[in-house]
Length: 96
Image (tube, rainbow, N blue to C red; front, side):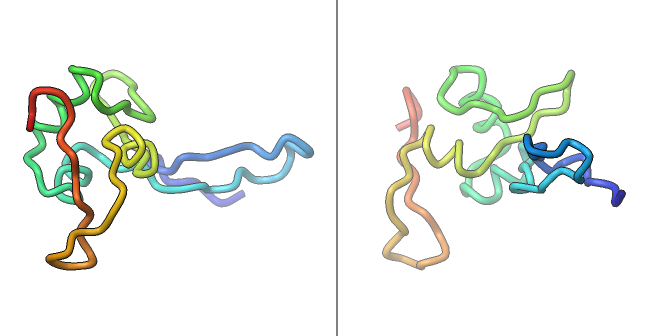
């Protein structure tokens, strides 16, 4: 069985548990998510503390985020007109 990276989100196939788990999507660290959104890591921590975004994994000091869940939490709906690689982010709560 091949080792699965610790940052990967996995789903066990219900039909046959002897099969290796399927990797769904890599989870993002606070720094990776901040870089992708164009904000500082402290902003990600504040949004998490305020409940604006929900971590997919939290074990002690290790926090990881699923990109699709963050998109849903922040209600990102379109790409920026400045450059198609960047999404428009609507800041949650008091961060407008």
